[in-house]
Image 1 (cartoon, one colour):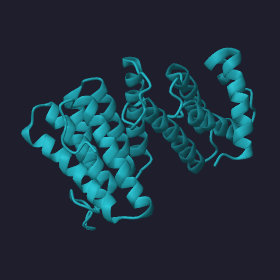
Image 2: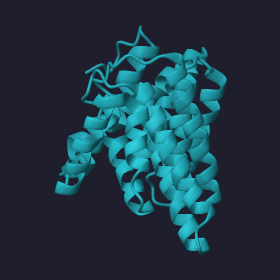
Image 3: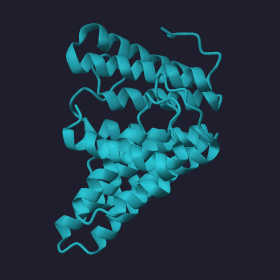
Image 4: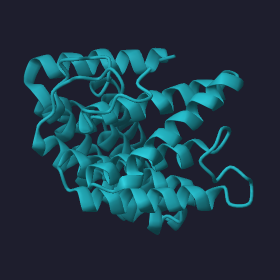
Length: 263
């Protein structure tokens, strides 16, 4: 739930957008003297202007605003007094960048907002920044896998199929590494969410490249999510349902002839 402070800032952000679009929003945020507050308001702007339920959201404005927030945060990191503070600030920029990349991706069930090629290009740049930062920040494999996955999604949208395949392969490998030895690194019911999701994406792009095993890999991931949802409860069930829905949504976009497992 949004806090009262978030709601107040959101009203100010909306008013600035009406007055003068993204430049006015940026001017409003940059007028805030305290660096931590500015970061908070940039994060609110990313969250609310990027709301996937808003079908007429302005992706160009979102890119401009969040890119400015990332730049401001990195500038704060450059003048930070100690390494720990610089790490935290760079990590904040990393999160803003990841969320921007995710907002620009066309992989979310029910989100039919029109996107253009330059939106995917911006999303890919943001994802590539995340890949670099998460390596430099020493993030664990599952966090690094997420960055490769979102990069792969934008490569898919840009019809760079071999690059998408490589990104999804890396995401899959990192996801399996994160749960190695737990028995959750296989394509089966109850396996790790990332392991199943990235395997499904890899299957989609392999099928697009004409690899005979691709479609079976995609379908196996969907079936594993379905089997997990059938026996799980709570958050695990919700995640499994969402994972299957996302894979099928993307498959319908990129594999139009896909009819199997379209529930």
